[in-house]
Image (cartoon, rainbow, N blue to C red):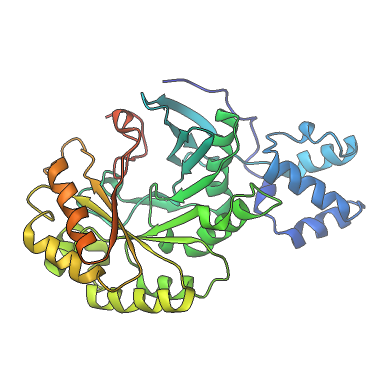
Length: 353
């Protein structure tokens, strides 16, 4: 575990500059007697370079830097701790200005760097197999707080981020506007420039938000945490989406594919004796057949104190084979960072078991 330096201390009466829209920033600069092009310079320092102090903004006049420092803070995060996995993944516990903490993960692979970020501190969905939901929801994150996680990982690795998944703590579609704004900043050429198809948002199945997402213009990838195609089993595993039936989910996903032409992913964590039975496999095949979909089979990642256990490798392989027999593409996803509790379903708001 590695401790990090603290962020510069900022007064609680200062406004976070990152919270300003482009129009608000232009208005602020106008009040300060500054030309409009300064807004572009400031935004570049914030969103591209990840500046943590106004002194770093060397192409701004000193008097402007001083004026901004009197009125604003740059927010950002403090790294409380970091753990490094044997597979090279790094998990971070980050703290925001109000003391709220979240976890995020960086996963390198060759010349690529994937980042898994949280959209909320904690989660209200209460999924039975997930460590995050055990403590409930603290609060939703702002778009800049989500974005800052990606920047922190990028800076720690010193590498360009090539893909981002909103699969950490929280339900992104219960924080829709902030999650979408963060994705757009991550995608923007004035931000991190990550391709839209390399940005994935995962939802437990919030149907009104899925309908809304289908109308967004970007080519983001949608992942559905399915985990069972049997209503009774899914209700027990995922009580937070009990009001959204599988039949309704099936219908809305068909509409999503017809409208967007994009292939969604279904996430399926295999739990021994719960959702890996013959009946469960048959229901999954029925749910996915004749649909444009990809199924990610995930052997359940163990969570301390949980009554659930992962299925066998053989059973995971059987799921892939049977899905292929009905024309459904499926793969076994290899979880990263299991030895530091950084894998799917293991994130909490503190490091260590």
